[in-house]
Image (cartoon, rainbow, N blue to C red; front, side, top):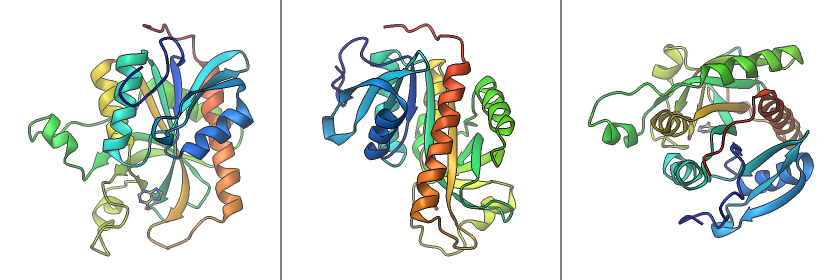
Length: 242
Ligand code: HPA
């Protein structure tokens, strides 16, 4: 048990999928995992562990934003010996060639958050994906014909920033999309020597205002989960420390 997770020792698999939304964690467990057991209900941050094609996998909701995400990532790594963390989330596109339902593999995460400035005493850390996870996910996605892009994302503290043109500087520097968690994931993973990747579905277009329909969201989320599970299945069994 940790402060925010009620799971017992060994209840959580070394590979953990991380959606923000608890109902998406439940959906993943019910739809994709065999014999899923709920390991956490604290704060309704639902978490489940089950099997997919024989591989033991957990899915744990993280809530939204770097502070909430960091609590769950920290406890999964430090208290439950998680070794591979795969975020499955949504993002808002910043580049004209991206469309809703496209998949973004986050190679690196810029951020407007002060969290890393505190952590690194005002200096800039470059949060980056695990290259092997990124390479495998890209190969799997292109192999099954998914519309996938690899590049930088912006991890923002604000879903509703004050300034209308806040996105321009990031778009101008080639950042593909905005979301709210990946910089924390890559920073904590680097710190602990665990492997991490963010797989994101475009749910809206920040520049054009395009929005995905409810059906788009469901289908897009399903495709992303299948990619994340195929990635998990492709890995050698990670050595759990617990
Ligand atoms: N901004 C931040 N996070 C997001 C967005 C967005 O527009 N869309 C989905 N996640």
